[in-house]
Length: 406
Image 1 (cartoon, helix red, strand yellow):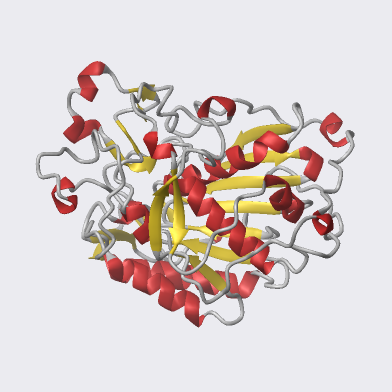
Image 2: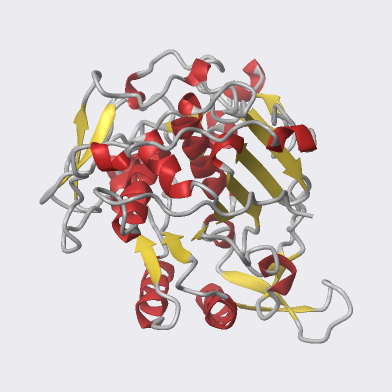
């Protein structure tokens, strides 16, 4: 799923470092950025149709998109899913300003860590920033569990690291992980986490891979192979993983340098009866958001996982973790998935596969441009809220250019 569509997988050469940096964006000369107050719940609101300011970019203009998410190119006949903005009830989200964002990223590393939904969001962020970057000064490098976007004139990287359970598992190969029995090692994280050090912004997620079974296969301590495992309830295993993750953060992350975020549940739209379409098949042929905002849409989330993440994050005093709640806003977007206009095992769906939507429709991942752009709009808001220089002060000093992962 992850290697085939990366357009540039060449190594960076020394020549890439010899060109001048981008001119400083005169942030101090801009109108002050109107950020929502910290008390505003950005997750509570509604989707508003807007075909003037959206989409933030065009699918055909972002050559870094993988075929998994290019729904128009893959034959989707409608395009209205692109034309919706998220309007919080009690405040407004600032528009994503790529130049302002890249000034905040200058000389820094941002890394998404997790599963393919975090990769979905990483692709969105790359597309949001790449129009302002000079031709020939932007590049994607794939190596092992990493996919790294280099914005060379800003000496910055936007990275994705494949770790679907955060801890070590038998599913850690980014290219070959479609296995019948997924087994985790809840107390082992260093194999992944050693790559997370010295990153300025870490954005984690882990959920979808937990939902195949009620019990999780857990490798026994000190075992010699993955075949030596037990089964434990999902929430117990998740709790052990989150404890391992939070302990690692507390012992290895300097909060003066690194900001940590956690993305909540991204929904699966497989239950059309729940949004009033009993004759529907998963999310197939859905073209509009669900617009009954009077009560939450029940999509069978395991909210124990949601609550556990919030509880652990709120208890972390040494290394603060900002939870970004994307769940309810995304619940309404039954229309925005890749559905039948995507890839499976590296190939576009065939007519025969499309004729069997119950089996082949992907109602997990999102078309781009689309919903993950809004997730990044919220991430942008949170990052700039943490930046002391976002309006009327000088940009931060340059740091050395992050090198590709070894």
